[in-house]
Image: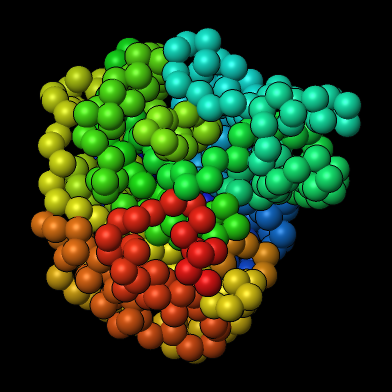
Length: 440
């Protein structure tokens, strides 16, 4: 086991990794930007290293500065969390070149799955189910030709993107050119490249993902999460197990994932769209997921601890002798500092930030009272996870916990989350990715 791990992230995920380090008897090193010096993760770590500046590019995206901080702190490994540098193969190689261990998959896996059309082609060639889509769009003539071949409506997606950013729907050829201009512009500004591809836009579809873990020799799936409740193509509520989908269909999807991804060597998630009784590959996230806690609650596993132990050289077969059973239900709601109507970020000073302690509720908070939510980073305040022996109990506990959260100084999306959880359609699990838009 590592003696000291640098946590190359902030907020809730940094706190979660620090807790895993504590449970493994490993020292943790936090990094922080100048405007994050007062965040909880800085004090909770064994030690901390300042990364000067406040912009992401100067701090949490500054791989050279992070590796240097790890060397100063005499850390043996770096855990990137999610977002920022977590899926950057150049960073993973730089970590290894510095004589440190990157806690995540090999750079070759990050590279293989990082570019979306390449990932689609590789998964297709290895037998994983796929919905209709295109290769990289090279020009407007190819755009029109591929859209006609796939059939409208189509989704335009940045090839190097993530988090739903830049995804644009075109209902017909008249809307296609405007959508193309929008998608390529956002992709260039956000990801540094304007390349996009097309996928069939599936109405009444569900977003279902498979959690897996591997050690380079064997791979195991740890069931599924339903992430269909989204706004602007970004997840708001996740749950496990996925309701109203036959367990035999989920088991077959898990089998295909294990077969396709033999040799994978860390935590990862295969994301799919489920439409008309059929799954199709969406993308693979080669990292710890924001919603990993949902799976932890229904399996009893410490996914972060397992990821660290595998990175240190332990084998999956010695850590998990067999796949655990599903135990109950869990639902996560993402509480953001944002206007509940416009859904735009709402930075500000947290004059009140009080997190309830409740039976059957787990809250992963990014901040504490007195902190400031700045406009420079993701506005997530906390992940609120309710669990229970029934789905109804998990819903109820999540709803009660959201109402018990005390937050002043910023607006939050709590009213929207509560409206979703108490809606008849959600309770009946009549879910699809258009759910939030229909509700509003």
